[in-house]
Length: 273
Image (cartoon, rainbow, N blue to C red):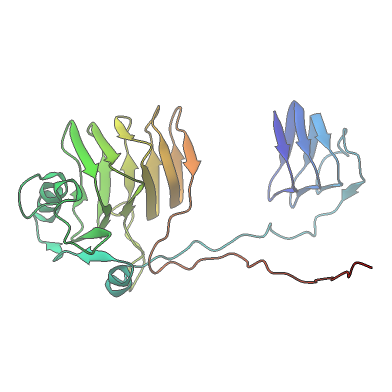
């Protein structure tokens, strides 16, 4: 079943073909047809081609002049070290060169002094750490790696992230944030597929991890049967079989926050007799 508490607007054709599909407002096609073979549209139907659709409570209006559906521009999130530091993150010295990704992995998964150590390696007073990879290499996890997140962790790279090996990312103590990002470049255009991010079938997250995935290229989410909470932002997003995500808002230093503010508009005071 589907209940859409709004309008449905497509540049191409629209097909509503389920008995328990309910569209509260209008169904609009800019350049093509609207077909409601099963289900109900409680508003109007705007169609450019084809015949007037059935199962529409409002009017059937043939028009090809609607223009494209409104869209939001893709967010161009860049990496601003100072803003991450202001947000309470410790900034490691960037990993560079041919071994940058290997060294970054050793830090994240390490348990000895000088590594993340499940969060124990983050200096006191910081909420997390930024692992910045100043290279176009591919960051991967070791097979069967378990990363305990006793602090927040941000893996930010100029290259790609491919978690194809079996790995477990587990928050410890309280809710932890995990950022997997290949930011929008400060100059020029993104390099695709160099900046792709892939979360494989055998990658798991426990209920104390909120994950933010960002890439200006393709984000591929293949993990199944996992408690994935957070957000996935990519120019292209590929969703695999049985992928299940619970949306959670995650603050990203340097990203514009779009929203609204509620306040009291009117107060009426009534004095008792």
